[in-house]
Length: 249
Image (cartoon, rainbow, N blue to C red; front, side):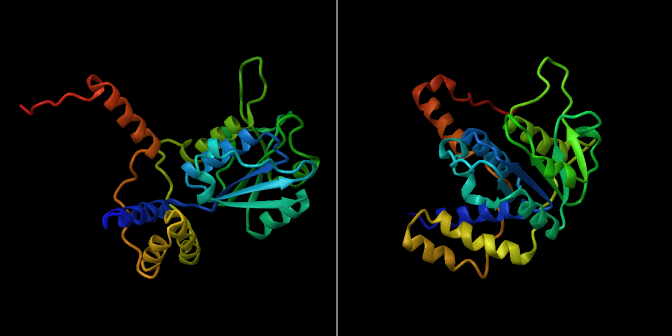
């Protein structure tokens, strides 16, 4: 392992850490499809949402599909609540408004839903939706407007649309900054640095030395590693696919 690789990993971690947010969280109640749950986890990680809450009311939470998450779950804080009331209490104690996705008359269309400073967005079971307890405790019930024969969307798609609307659904919206406290960053930094060592005791020890004085974040986040590797494989297989050099004039 060259000396230059380790700092780059940690600098990327610091860049991601700076964008992490807890003012926005996603709640899944009794989601039974492991693909859906895993896809939601991957979307949350991609958009900087640190916490995902899995609520077990009637069905045990499915196992995570690592082929779908592509390791995204390693960088998240996944909370499991046994019983809806326990989940609601935890969210209220954390200061969240509760917005529940549900198709019903009078539900607020997503674009008109207030942008609360601290809100939890709740999604129910793929077939039966949310339980009545969520509806009774909701600060708002929202729906995603559709115009086709299908009146509802796949769970993971619905969650992705809500996340994108909440983060970028306003004119000239910029990616919102992270909102973690220094203490929260310190906790996650220790977890992430250990995970970035990929089981190497030597790297783990070296990365640990950076905990008290973290490296500066990278100026930008590079493209997804898998995309870069795929592009490299394609270029190696077909030299004509590589971009041609041009000369400035």
